[in-house]
Image (tube, rainbow, N blue to C red; front, side, top):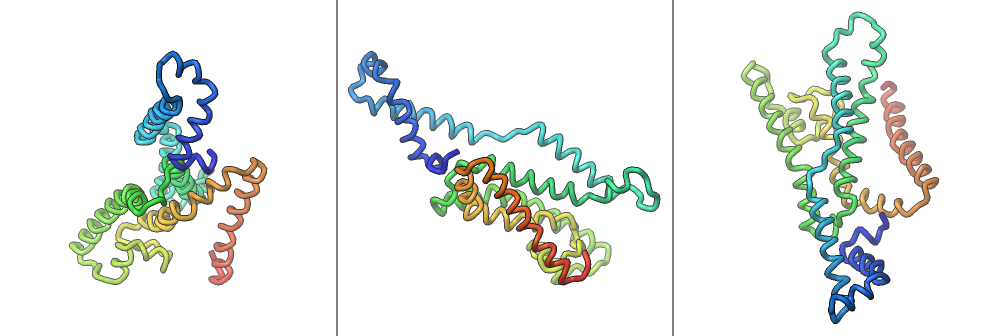
Length: 243
C-alpha cells in the first residue's frame, strides 16, 4: 500500500476523491444537499468496516501447518539419539534453519497485523502495540522461567545468581550465548525483543517507504538486508575464531 494510505485521514480523502466521479446521480436522487457529506459518510462506513476487520483475530492455517512441521523438526533434533548416523541426521542437525524460519514467520505476522496502522503517531498507540506484542509473550516466558527456577531450587541447585537474573530479564543471551538458562528456550524470545521494540519506530516506516519501489528494487533491498545480517555473524566468528 502507498505510504499516504497508512494515515486514516489520508485514506478517507483518497476514498472521497475516487468516489466523487461516480456519485453525482446518486446525490440528486437521494436528495442530499451536499455531495461531500454523502461521500464522507460512505467512506467513513468503509473505514469503520476496515477497522473492524483489522481488529479480528488473524488465522493462517497454512502458516500453522508450517509451524507444526518446523516444531516437529526441533523436537526431533533434541529428542532423537545422536549416536547413530541415519539418512535424516544431516537434516536434523540443521535445526538452525527451522529456528530462523520461526523468526521470519514472526516478522511476517507482525507486518501483516500492524503494517497499515499508525503506531508511532502517539505515545498511547505505541504503548498499546508494545503491551499487545510483548506483554503476553514476556509474561508467559517469565512465569515459565520462575517455575523452572523453583524446581531447580527445590532440587538443591543454586539458582540465586546473576545468571538467573539475566535470564529473567532476557539479557543473558546477548551477553553469553550459552543456552544454560533455567528455561533455556527463552533465548529465542530474547533475540526477538529488539525487533519488536524497533518495529514501530524504524522498521514499519522503512517498509512503508520501500513499498513504493519497483519489484526489482525490492529484490535488491531484500538481498542487501540479507547480506547486512550475515556480516555481523561473520565478524563474530572471526573474533572468536570458531562458530
